[in-house]
Image (cartoon, rainbow, N blue to C red; front, side, top):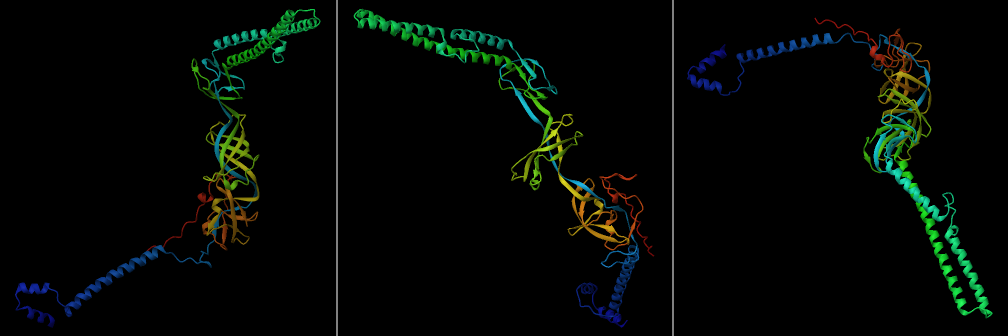
Length: 481
């Protein structure tokens, strides 16, 4: 009160405007009874806010946290048993399989082309038709080639007559067997004998010199005629052989007007139409050998030491719903440096025509067998810090850890080997709540089954057990007061 009176008396003589300016200007804090009251009010309001916040936090803590559960050594929850379902470990013999994807192709795919020019007279085999080796696909016009063959045959017959042999004796004939050569040879021999006699008579003085000259000239003429006959015979013999070759070409041209399939197969495509003029080398049709197929695919290099020629395999063309069996036919000797794979070619029997060339397919190559392999649902396996393990239930209903190795997958199951022993009961549900030494209570319901076995009634194979497992309800939360 004394402070207030002093303050009022001090301001009594100051004008109002100046007093306001002084009040607005900063001044040092002067502690007094009035400032103490204001300070206590601020502290009181802050204390009330803090009390409200603490009360709210206490309520939330009471709602969110139930009674503390007792913990086992190592920090694991203990107390109530963990309710799980189990599966007996049953060893089995499993094939080691490598899966390869590739494209099916015919054992042979032949593009048949025309060898001669001509107009398409008839289409004998069309798309999808089965043809035999030598069977007609397309027929070209034959009239002109037939006439050319007849002309060549007549010319060949005339050439044989000049040589003096038939077709069978042409290869054995020589120029000496020609009739003209034989005649020229006889005349030459007679002229030589006459010349020899005239020379003997001239030596005895009986024949005149003119007779000797005449006989010599006759002998020389006969020799020249013999040489010419031999040349003509050689030419006639060569002409006969040329006519024979021409006749063969004419006959082949006539035969080539009938375009046939070189293999047993199915017409995959017809490439010409009726009346079309084709040229030599033009594709006519495509024929595929489909009773035996080939699968071409690439195999990762890590399988290079196990993929061998002759290994059996199965084919699954899921898109067309067909399957088949085959063997590894060829294995590439080199690994592609870019893809780190090597080529494989398998031969598949397709006599029932279930598989189609060009289909995408998966091949399962059997490389051997694994003994004592156990199939478990993937829900039974846990992996922590690189350690793959399962839990089994011992005779005291305690959880025991078993380390395993996953060999490969089979559907929704994993094929494992390792410390797991046949007959042990493997925990397949609620694995996340199990720890070594935990008390286990086995659910009396039917156990899940591996996908390779028949599922019990009411269950579907391949469905993880955890999907159908009913977890225990959480403890009730205390009501916040």
